[in-house]
Length: 447
Image (cartoon, rainbow, N blue to C red; front, top):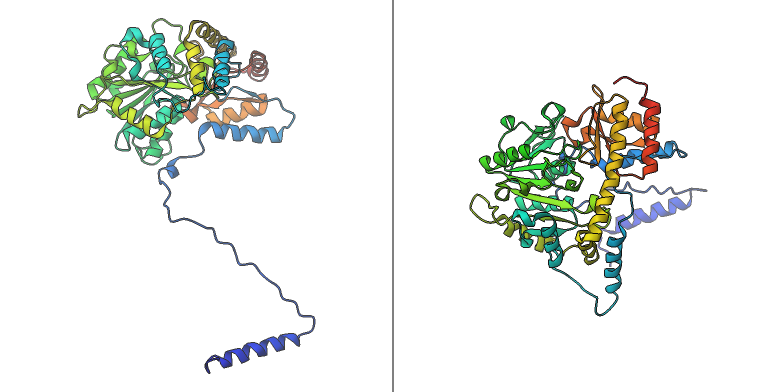
């Protein structure tokens, strides 16, 4: 039974319905309510908002796609991202094939392995690169690559440390520091809170430590990406002495060490006395054996390296690896082991030599056209100067006029402005065709 107060409302509604029926040919228009974005109550990591744009290489890929859409018939040659192009050497492929097939048998199957890497591979890495330098297999942590390990190291160090980088340098060092909260905002040139150590032709691409502030962590890459400069023994001794004097830890990126042919340029930081007390080294099979897609690398943390309170750093890195990583692929590790056995190692060196020949071709071409050119001798990268010009403008011009993708130097830091990086990772016929295109567009210009 309806309450007395509700009866008038019902009568009013009924009247409206009846009135509606008396309207001839009336139409009812339904308008959808505007959709409201569904959100959570989770606050975004404010440090992500500090990043200026997309990560450098995806941004280059985006611009390449836009250019291809605009010029669908253009044959674009990539000298941009340092991605290997040649087949993995046969001895290494065979080892991975055998390992993969073995997983299909009762005798050859294996599941989870040690997060630190298979013992045989850790020992082989140590014997091939570090045995005469005092390093031990237990100090070597096998992973899915140096880039991933840099992120894990940042995770281990935490947000309350200060950071220095070479300028220019591999963008991961800076971007991961920003994401972790180690920096302030971008100031239009670089990020507040990061010590940018300028590396230019004027100082032989090596920092002037007399002008550098003390930081907890120093990221250092040799041969350097992007400049291609390999630090000498004397320079690296300065680095180690500076770190020890300031109680800093150096994260030494040796991803291109096998490209070094200059006997005065060490292939590992542990050739330098005292490095075991202040340096972590990270390395990778990516640019040695064509493992950019296979994913395999390693990081060395000496037992002697300790925090301010005396606690061994190796213990914390072991904890990080066993917590957030389940170990590198069994198949990839089989390939890595083959890389370090004599047949595979020689084939790997031949692959490195191929890319070094590409680098020499590019370097000579730019030199003959009158450019200021660096790198390309102990590294797979050629660093080309365009004084007075913005790097992204040069990148766009080369893409538009030559259909060639390079990498703008400013993407590696403020010290890279006015340069582009040309990668030697490419098929030989593409390198030779790129040379012809460069010569056609830039060969008659004065630089």
